[in-house]
Length: 257
Image 1 (tube, rainbow, N blue to C red):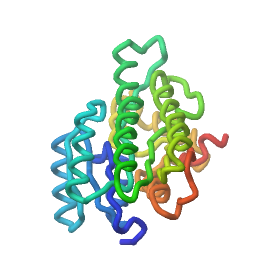
Image 2: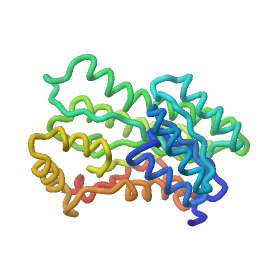
Image 3: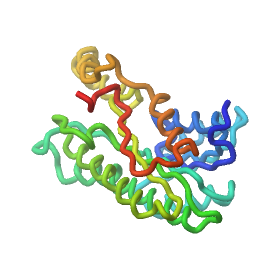
C-alpha cells in the first residue's frame, strides 16, 4: 500500500480484466477509490465484490463505452458515491488483426467505435465533470498503442483507431491545460492479457505466435499488465504535475527500433 493516489477518485473503463483490472488494483493499493466500468457485467460484479471484500473502496458499473448514456451514468454514480472525479483512465478497447482488404465495413465500425468513439465519449464526460467540480481539474489518461505510433502489418483498422487516440490526447491537453486538466496517453506494446491468450489459442502454432511477438521487443519479452498500470499511476499522480500531452510508449523498446 502507498499514498501515491490517496484521497483521489478514479474512473477506469475496461476495468474488469487485463490492463484495466491491473490498473484498478494498482490504483486501489495506491490509496484511490475506483469506479470499475466494463461491459462484462458478470466480471464487474465478481471483481467488485472481491475488491470490496479486500477492504478497498470500489464501485462497479456495467456499461458500454459507445453508449454515452451508460458512461454518463458511470460518472454520476462515481460522483454520488465519492464526491468528485480526479482521474479517468479510458482503457476499454477491442483488438483486430487483418489487412484492409480483409476488413469489412462492420469490422471498421466496431473497432473505430470502441477504440476511438468510446475513448472520445469517456474523455468528453471526464472533461465536463472536471470543469464543473470545485476545485476544477484532474488527470485523464487515454489508452493508445504502439500501433498508433508506427506501421504494423495486419493492423487495419486497429492502428487508425489508436492513432485517433494519440491525436485526441494532444488536442485535449492543449485545450484544457489552463483549466487544470492534464491529458496524457500510454502506448503499450504487446501485453500478456486474456485477449492475447485468446489470440494465441486461435493460432495454428501458439508458441511460434508468441515468439514472433517477443521478437519485436528489444527487451526480450512481452509486457505485464502491472507494468502498464505503473506508468498509468505515475501519469495519474501529482508526481506528473508538469506532464500533459505526453504520448508515453510502454513497450519494451518496440518503437525505439
